[in-house]
Length: 349
Image (cartoon, rainbow, N blue to C red):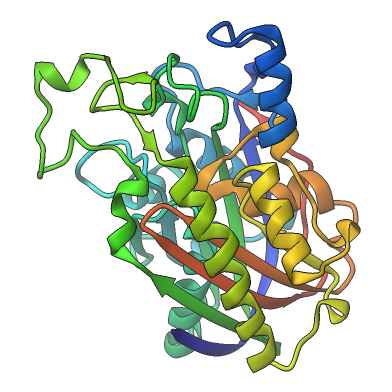
């Protein structure tokens, strides 16, 4: 376990942007009406936001960042670190962080780079950004996190299409004299096949065959360029490794669930998340959900949930446990104190 503490970093603001298009799982024609009802009850996703063609994570994250600059009054010339966490980059190269630096007109003496993580990406991004800020003395940093996952899902794959939504978020960080944040990070690459897009990278280059949808062992139809999800493997991983590591993390930091205001989890699916919540003995009112209206938004799900569910209370001091887990397999937890976070309402693009 990679466990570490960072002192003197605070969240100034969090913003989130989603597509305007709303897609309902009650209209999903691959399933019968009764199957749709059962699906919604099990995974907890009623509607999702779906990006139009050629609109990317960069567009949503930058829209959120612009809102954050406007609401906080922070001078963008003061941003000296920008990290973009995404698995749906605009191009193979250059890094999406460089495109964001140009679009947002951040200064040229701003360090900018990508982190290619999904479900665990927000906790990793916070840890990396806070570490760099503390060690370098950088006063202000911008963490952009999001994914456009729906474009990678086959309409005929009931394991992925009804689950995922699209979103981009922006988090503004600054050095402060207070706060101590604690992190724990984990990795298990033996689970690479649990959530994977097999073709399109350097290992399996894109070919005509990559685009052909075929019936798979699980009965779903998808191409090799589509996202594949082994639901049972992901479920077993999530309800064992996540609560085990959270219990250890909280014990190491002498913290109990009762001492926390909120436990904000990656919005994987309702059955999985509720299993984790119950194992860890958190009360329902400590665990916010955005899953029902936005779906599983991959790396964006934690900050999006804070914006959609907690924006009215983030101006008050809060002690929060954040937990991201999934593709990789990768998982990470962050125990943070927040103080007067500027958290504007969700915006659409």
